[in-house]
Image (cartoon, rainbow, N blue to C red; front, side, top):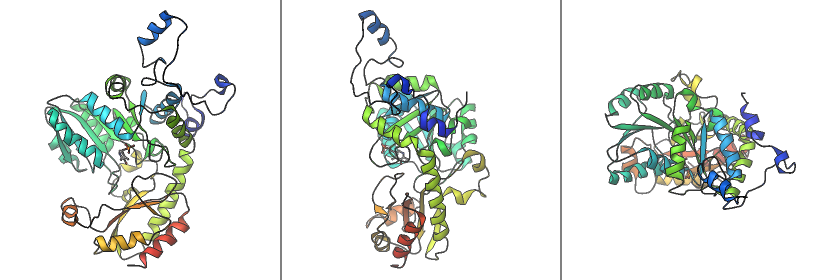
Length: 385
Ligand SMILES: *Cc1c(COP(=O)(O)O)cnc(C)c1O
C-alpha cells in the first residue's frame, strides 16, 4: 500500500473510532501504563519498543507521529526525541565506539560540530569535508564507521550528491546518516537514495509554528531499534505527549505550508537578484543547472536562504537587519514567521573569511506573511545601505 504525503500528514495511522470518534487523537498524558495481570505486564516488558509500558519507551501520542514520519521518509522505523540534538547525540552515542572515525560532509550545524569534537575525549575521531566527492573519498579511513551529511546545509545551502555518497559508503560498509531538516521528507527522501538514517529537528518546518522543540531519527529497523534501546532510553531525551501532539498538528499542514514557503522564497529571490549591492544568493533552486542530480534528489525547495551584501561589515549588516520589521531577529527557522540572522559579529571577520563565509552574509527564513510584505520590508532595509 502506498500513501501520498498529504494522506500521511493528515490521517495516516489515526483511527477516530478507537477514540470515541475524536478526529484529533487524545493526548496520552501519562508516564506509565497499568496491566490487568502480572503475566501480561512481564510479557509487555520483554519488548518495550512495541508495547506501552512507560513513556520513556513508547507513548501512543508520540507513536502516531513516529509512524507518520517513518511513512513519509519511506523508512521502516522512527524514534522521536525532545530535540533535534537529542536525536543526533543519541545516534552518535549508539553507533560510535572508541577508535571509530566519522566523516562529516558539508557545512554541519554548529551544535553537531561541537558534539563530534567533544566526543574526541572518548577517542572518536572525525574529518570535516566539503561537498566534493573526491575529497570525501580521501577522507574515508579504515576505521570510518559513519558518514554524516547535511544537504542542503543551513548557512550556504550547498547540496551534495546523496546517491553517490550512499553508494560509496555502502561499498565500504559505512553507515550513512543525513540531517534532512532543510528539506523535510516532503521535498527529499534520502532513504530512497540509499541512506541508512534520516534525522530531523522537528522544531523547524515540521512543527512549523515556533512553539515546540523536537527531533527524530528514521531508518532501517535494526539501527533505529538499537538507537531506541541505548541512545534514547538510556540518555532519556524523551518527547512529551503534549509536544508530540503539537508537532503532529503542525505536520497536518506541512505540504501546503512548504508549497507557500517555496513560492514566497522564489519571489524574494527574484527580487534580490535585481539588486546590485547583493552579490550572491544562496538557495538550491539556483543550482539546478550546475547539479543535474538535484532533479532526482529534491522535489522542491524550502524557504531558508542567504545572500551576501557587497563590501559589507558588521556595521552595514546591522544597519540592514535593524531596518527590517516583518523579518524578526532571532535563531531557528522554518516557522510561520519570517526571520533574519547573520553569522557576522563585531569581532569575527577574520574567522569568517577563513571559513569561506562572506562578512556580508545574511540569512532569511521566509515565512508565510506573503511575498509582497516580505519584499517591501527588504526594500526598506536595502534603501538604508
Ligand atoms: C535546529 C537544527 C538542529 C538542532 O535541532 P534542535 O531541535 O534545535 O535541537 C539540527 N540540525 C539543523 C540543520 C538545525 O537547523
